[in-house]
Length: 339
Image 1 (tube, rainbow, N blue to C red):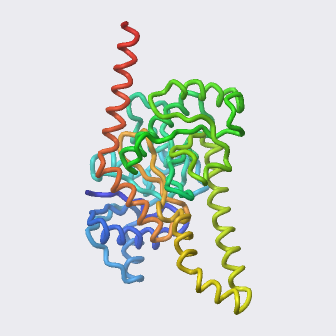
Image 2 (image 1 turned 60 degrees about the horizontal axis):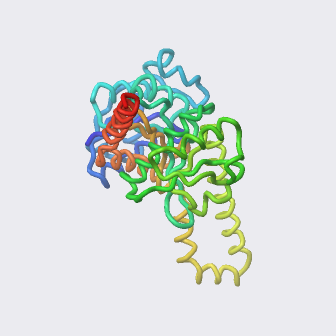
């Protein structure tokens, strides 16, 4: 198994990306292709005493920054680490591509370089999120700010398949993010999506309000990319605020510090349960080859876990499963028309 890595994508590149990649090499026994300025990669590894095991470096002279136009991945910055990484993926030089870089550029590269699976209207960013019970899948988290109802319906279909095949969830409960649980709530587009999802070949359970998402009332939560990204960022921010407030509360005096020692085991379990770094990033569902968008602020552990998602994706032949599922849907639609 060979993973292509954008060594210069993200706020902490290249050091944390290289460190995380080497952690993944040790843990998962993979080969990697590091894409980026070869001299800088080697100098960074040498300075920080990192051995580049099972690694091939492909030189790329440019970098796509977080403020760059996403379309620059196609032409203006065609020699960037991200652009070259996408091309290598297309040419079969690796089994998956992982980048912590510009989300818009990852979306454009996935859609226009790697390209969509036949039948998929729009690829979507799907993020595994912790809840009080078990992980859920949330999509779209930023790929499609403006959506049509049929896109949301397909997101539900792909998300349900992901939960079954990757996370082993039987009959995943799919819900539509909305400002109320009633069928009559929401924008015209959301109402139209609701009607489509009621008839879909997956376990649609209706609308879900934002406050119920952390309680795991659904296994897959569907939203347009604008709404989804807002919910995701708020989710992560609230988790950080709660953890920091809890820490401050226990550090007030000697008595509270002693209380912390008594409760430490349970607190550590809670921190791990709600730590987004455990999942590392998001998968781009609906494209022909596995693409993983790691968190822009990834440290080594976070990036290692993003690569873990690529490993899961490949081990489960998930791209092929989506292709087969959409092909079967297309055949079923043709048969219905013929009848």
